[in-house]
Length: 153
Image 1 (cartoon, rainbow, N blue to C red):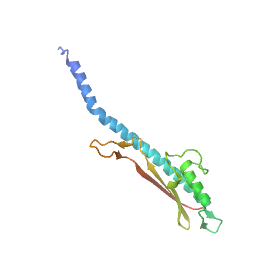
Image 2 (cartoon, rainbow, N blue to C red):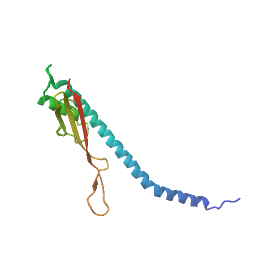
Image 3 (cartoon, rainbow, N blue to C red):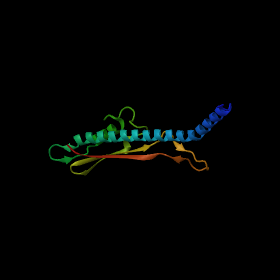
Image 4 (tube, one colour):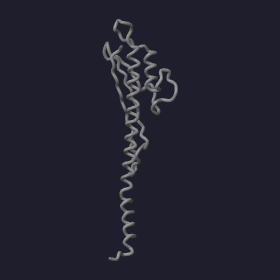
């Protein structure tokens, strides 16, 4: 059996066409997985910081042994700093890009518990998806929320 001399060359062209059709799909899939991983990482960072802030607030909110919760403004400010910056002084860079302590709220839903809520405006790595029909770009940003409620100690 003899092989045609141009058969190998034809097969190389087919492989190039297959790659040309599948590469855009693979690239979009790679960006989607990266974006999803980045969003999960930021959400995990935010929930962990909110839990740390609630733990800090719960340990200092109870006044003596009378069982009354007092939301001291200094303790509330320290909790907001701890959630956003990772320390009670509010020094250094925020744990998440462009996060401020204005997105953190501390409340007492009942006489024995405290609630720390945090909001963060997620900004994707990709930015916005351009539209091909002349309209505004599609924004992929959204607001993340985390709330932790703990019994005051």
